[in-house]
Figure: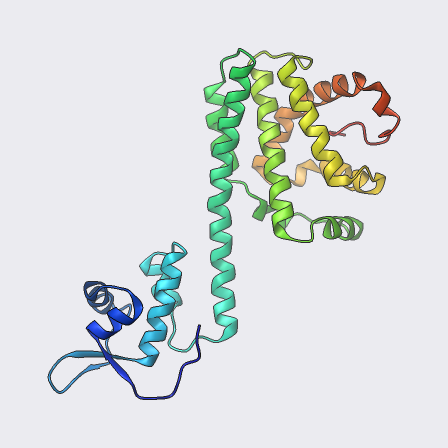
Length: 272
């Protein structure tokens, strides 16, 4: 936001509308609901706004573009927000947007799982997928903030996931692959079927990219996985449902690549 000057400049409704790109009707609505009340009227009875009101309107326009409702905006907009207030508002809404993204990714994961089953010549389990969509939408990466990592895990994972996007990408790649595994298993596919082996290759690629084949990193991921009882419910249920099929598919995949087994010994199982 730009620096506010200390002049006593005022704007009539039409002038403020033209300056900010909103309609006069919108300003009238904001006035009526108490979101942006006019501070007074001119001698001629016309409503006017001040520089402070323009700042508030700029906040309203910004927050509205982020998807906040007018009620939410009314609770957040202040005449002269401090930087800490602005930061808090943005952080809170960032979490809301991430949750919406999580829900969308859960649905996309289900679509990809359906395609995997169809490509294998099997009917998807609609009831299963619907159940997992509901479960996954109630569980997100944000929920992992409640998980207690030990110091060694924090150190290694902190270095590996220097930014939230890296963690977000891994999380949703795993969810897609795990849901595909469940779908293949429930549709009657064998772990050595081509579709299952393609899945195993994608899983193994994910593990190697995330850990870079480093034994310490693989050990940390194995530790977290071993403590699955403390996972968010939706992710725990998904892992429980997919683990057996993934184990068998990856075992077959690695056996078919015997020349690579020794190279990656010690990290040849994803789910242990």
